Every structure is written in C-alpha cells, then in structure tokens.
Image 1 (cartoon, rainbow, N blue to C red):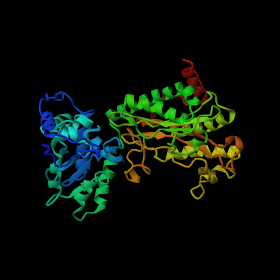
Image 2: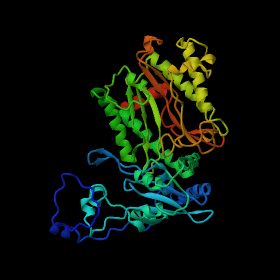
Image 3: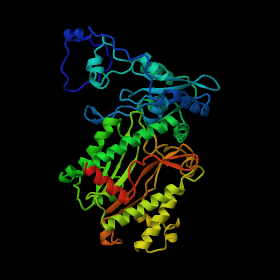
Length: 486
C-alpha cells in the first residue's frame, strides 16, 4: 500500500500507481520557497475601505462571499478559473489559485465586521496530494500562497478551508450568502430555513457599491483600454493573412486573443469577429467565417487586466481598407448616433438619456433613407418602437470588473438612475441590417455596424477613454492604411 494520508485526491483514470518507495522519496529533499515579505495584492490600500462600506449595510450579520469552484469542461479537464467578481473586488485575489476559497465578514458586535479568508493550505511535502492531486496539487497546477502568505498579501486573517463548515452549521448569527457560486456553500447554508431575498440584497449591495469607480479602478480600466487598442492595431496588421484563411474570423480572434493573454488575464468576454452578415448577429462568437474584402468586419473585443478589469470596444471597418458608398452611409449614421449620445453624458443626466438620444438619430436617419415608413417621433413612441427592427439592443452599459458591470443593482440606482462622477460606461449604438430583410434596399442588406467606446463620467461631462482608436470613417481608412503599409 502507498503511504497516502490525504482523504480525497482528484486523480485521473489513467494515473499510474505510486509505490511506497516513490511516495517516500517524493516526501523528502524539498527546499523552502517563501514569497517576498513585501508582496501585496494590487490595489491593497483600498480593500479595507470597500469591505467597510459593505459592512455598514449589514450590521450584526455574517456575510459570505465565495470565490467559486472549478467547473468541468470535458471529463477530467476544467475550465480556466476566474474568481467571482465580488470576491475579487473585496480581497484583491484574482488568480487561478483561488477555487473554493471563501471570504467571510464576521460580525464583531452590533456594528462592524472582521474579514476572514477561508483558503486551501499549501500541499505539505510529507503528503502525496502535492504531486498526485491533478486539480489542486502544486506539481500539477502551480504553487499557491499558504495561510500566512495570503494574510500578508491581503491584510486579512486566514483560516483553513476545511474549518468553514463548522461555522456555517449549528448556532450562528443571521447569514447572507452570494448564492449560485459555490454549490457546497449553497447546500450548507440552505439546511436552515432561509429567505432568498436576504441573499439577493447582498448581491444587490455588492453591485451598487461598485457603480462609482475609485481612482485606482479607473487606472486599471484605462490600462485595459490601452492594451485593447494595441490589440485592434494587431488585427489590422494581420488582415492580409486573415483574408487568405478559410476561417479568417478565427484568425482575427486569435490575433486579438494573443495580445489579451500576453498583456493581461485574457479577454474580458468572448471576442466577436463578425464579417459581412455575421455582424447582424449581436453576439456572434462562432467566428468560423471567411473574410470577403468587399465586406465590413465588426470587431467587438476587450482585454481583461490581471486585476480583472476589462475594456469593451467595437470598431467596424472595411476589409478592403476603403468604405463603399453604402457602407459609409451606414457607418456615418451610427457615428452620428454615438456622437449625439456622448454629448449628453454628464453628472445628473439620466442613465437612459444617451440611449434615447442615439435612437432618435437612428430613427431620423432610417426615415430619411425611406427604410422607416413612419415618422421618427411615431417610431420612437413607447407603443411603437418600429425602428428597433434595425437596432434591437440597448446602446450601452456600466463597465468595470465585469463587462456588464453592476448588473444586480436596483433599477433606481442604475437603469432608471442618474449618472455620477466616477461612473464608467460604454456607448455603442449599432445598425444590424439583416441579409433576408425585404424592407431594406438590396445594397443595405447583410450589413452590421457598431461603434463602441468606453467613457468615464467626469465633473463636467465625460472623458473618452478609448480615444486612441479612430472613430470617423476617414480616420478609420487612414489608420488602416498606415498599419497595413508599415
């Protein structure tokens, strides 16, 4: 028998047996490998303030925020792990070494909480899981910080993950949990009668607390935008090769994703590389089409930083390097809608104002073309909305540590709320002219155009974070010409 004292190993069906001699040999001769004593998670200075803001909303209650768990992609292979956004925002821990970990804000009296992290300890070298456990063993997935090192990284007291069930069962203070993230915790906490609304209130608060971005967060978003801009440049340079490949959209996706992995954690969402009529599919991520030099390419992509803040930018450009007359007409109408939307962004404006302004311009343009047969004001009425046949979705959303950030916030603080200094959002009107739409003239069918930029609400307006990428049609052509002829 092997000398294995672990209670459960995540091994593969094709693992080789381990002899007692090998197990004994593997347990000796390992040098210490401590982390630097000066290491802190990025943004460390603001983390206690974030937790304090959450604490004041729920005095006397235990708050449980899990990092999430590994999810199977295929048989014994997991998807790449990304911690839950609320966990990352409160702890600064954003790496792939966090699955199963849990942050608990433990009430310390009528007011105030102590933060405690429940984490998986390092695999000690006298136990075989460090080299036999495919999911968590360090020889399989890499070193993770031990309890003391994690406390140093975060400034938060750390306990063993195995001890967490003890505090979540039996007598306990009122408890709120971010549900649907860690099934084990859902089961543990649900053993006692609970009101799901109390958990929903925790998730709502976590979204609303993230609406106004701190200066450090704004810097991370600007960094994400910068890397994304470079990725768009990479794509234009790669167009000659992509045009020759039978699945040129995949080539484009791969070029951008290379930049995202090289400069950050990866992409903040699946890249949309949509050529021709594929651009009329709002979330086209199959990216399996060829490129046609007579068509447009819609590229919607964003780099996610190592701290998990993401950009979200879309550009639509002619694969030939020059817009045709019809392509330019569609592009310039979308640009006019975006310009009008950006012009209304300022503190105190309603969040919905910029979308409504963009749709006014779109409806007027469609009417001028003869596509929209009713007057614009009639098409824009709530009991009509006929213009939406050609532009179905909203014109923007909050942006941050999630691409669609703060989605659990109450309508009165977000969708029906007003803009504040420190909000970061996208403005992204589009026209999606379906290839089989008989209400359209032939020259417009199968064309999709979206222009999307990331903006920061300032004290007197809005700052275009993505201004390094061209927006007007002539500038787009000059940008392409420069990059293709370097």
